[in-house]
Image (cartoon, rainbow, N blue to C red; front, side, top):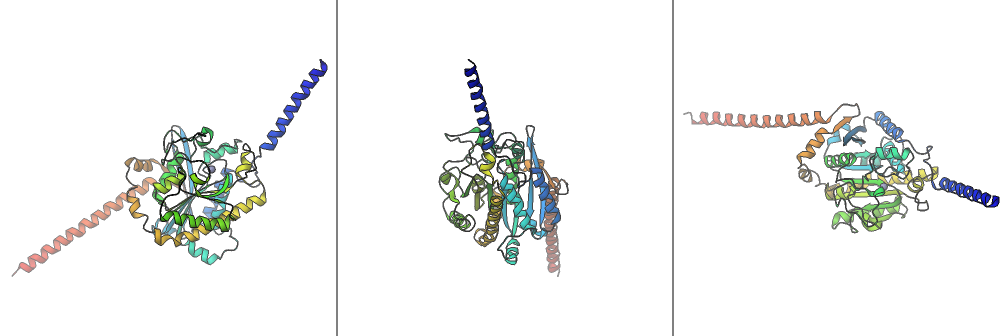
Amino acid sequence: MASILSFFIFFVLTCFSSANAESNSTFTPINRDLYHSSIDLLEQIKALVHRHPDKLTLETIKTGNKGYQAEITVATYCRSRRGSDDRSKFRILLSFGQHGRELITSELALRILSILSEEQFLPNTNPTSLKSALDKLIIKVVPLENLNGRKFVEGGDLCERRNGRGVDLNRNWSVDWGKKEKDYDPYEENPGSAPFSEPETQIMRKLALSFDPHIWVNVHSGMEALFMPYDHRNTTPDGSPTERMKSLLNELNQVHCHNRCMIGSGGGSVGYLAHGTATDYMYDIVKVPLAFTFEIYGDPTASSKDCFKMFNPVDLTTFNRVLNDWSAAFFKIFKLGPLQLDEIGSKGSTSNLDKWVSIDEYLDGYLMERRNRYGKKMEVLDLGMQEIRTYFRLFLLSSVLLLFMFCSRIAKSKSSRP
Ligand SMILES: [Zn+2]
């Protein structure tokens, strides 16, 4: 009896200790020596912008619904601040950290902003030619799109990719929204109650529609890949934009991804279709001619529960290698992008018109709280100024017309005088 009992105790202890060992070996914690906390990362970016007011500005956009609040910080790079509304410039919109667990992407955002501010430098780059390329650009960087989801990850839920109320922000857009594949997993891909149900997606949509970028890149991790539309079909779109996107991606793959990256349509290459994604919306609705999803790092050997290791480099060498390679890739895009400006320069004013259609979108924007970096609420003031400007123009135009009529009267009466 005693031997049975002792065998039982031994068995239980063995199971317990092996389970413990397994949980220790399968869960790699966040490496705090390499990664900033979300609060620290945003503070660093704020400080960087303050040190370089000639190049960088910062705004925080907040909105919410049904008791859920979200805020997104946007850093804008423009070498001459006066030109930040200049529609002739080539416009680039980059988003990082859309999925909570992909911490490395936001570290890349910080690195890119540091290089843009000239506090850090890219190796093997001629600074003069880089500066002249950057002169033609406005770059908007969203360093941490999903702050609420990221906080869950920092709290220990290392596999969380969704936002603060369980919605996948890369399934909440309107193109082919809500379709579910056979292997649909709500923990991973919950698309929300409707397209744009989530405040984060609403903010990003508004930002994209008003900025009207020539290039969009949605930066993720989990594998190494350079994707173009479509995510919801296993084909790429027809026509010349596709060729331009492919040639740009091929060049990036050769030079900066050492030919390891998978290239092609998101839906065609990755083995599953994704519905309601940001990149498909940017391409189809915002008409961004060069719309991409980059996957910058993945560890295929990590166990599927070891999310920090699967989605993020865990040692210093790999961490630095990823940031160096991918910041170089983005600066290659900054250089090559404007070269295509002539071909796609007709984008903008015409496509803008059919975007500003919905009155509730306008109201949405009106009600959305926008602050610049000094904390002033700008949106309401901006709209007021726009209206005053329009009235002033109308007033000028009618005065000129009246003056013209008056003068022609006088001229007539003078000439009819004998
Ligand atoms: Zn992702």
